Image 1 (cartoon, one colour):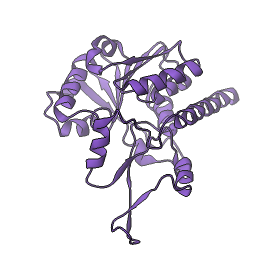
Image 2 (cartoon, helix red, strand yellow):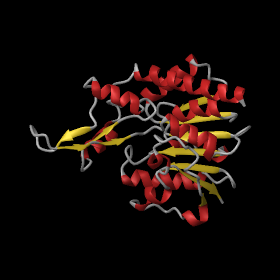
Image 3 (cartoon, helix red, strand yellow):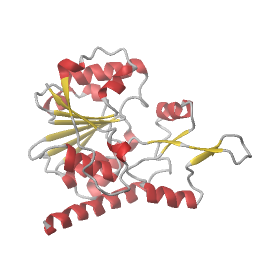
Image 4 (tube, one colour):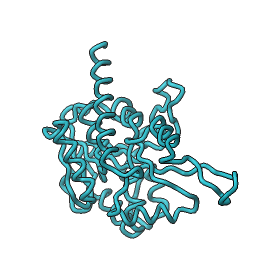
Length: 269
């Protein structure tokens, strides 16, 4: 048990080191100018919103940046007054706590299994899967070349190349990869990067190709929420069954339960 605890905590240290490496290579908002559509959608949000990558910036780091004046948790509702409101944060990555919840409490033993992360971005799901699971293959599919390059740098530096592969592609060009996957992870994957028609097409493609009976699908937010605004031909009741999760596994007082409750697990029928 002591040895297991040491290995787990050592994995935490490695993940934090990766996050620090990535922070040093990215602007504070952790978005590239090549992400035109995502930047535009965030700016069009009815309330002021900023992208704060949860893998790179935990609450302590955000607090430090706020103290240094590099980031703010609030905005002025009437310029020049003291009337302020909280900014809405959006993240396209899981935090360290969410990654540990995913691999230690949501997913079963992944020995010999294939994990596919759709929209792998910074690679957090892949790196955590390498460190916290025995998955034999971890595949990231990412449309943005800049993020693929960052992931490859980390894979090489931390010697993850034996089990992690990143594909620079649209997921809709990867049917065989989805068909062999035992676990597919989709975190805020289409809404900010595709228009509604493209989102519907992508979800229909996913539903057609993630078909291995008993395989697992992890989504943020729920499938119901993602599909509710789209005209997509996806029959959830014939495709998946939701698996109820225990969100009370962490007893620490500072756990962000609301973030954990955004994680949904489905079994393919």
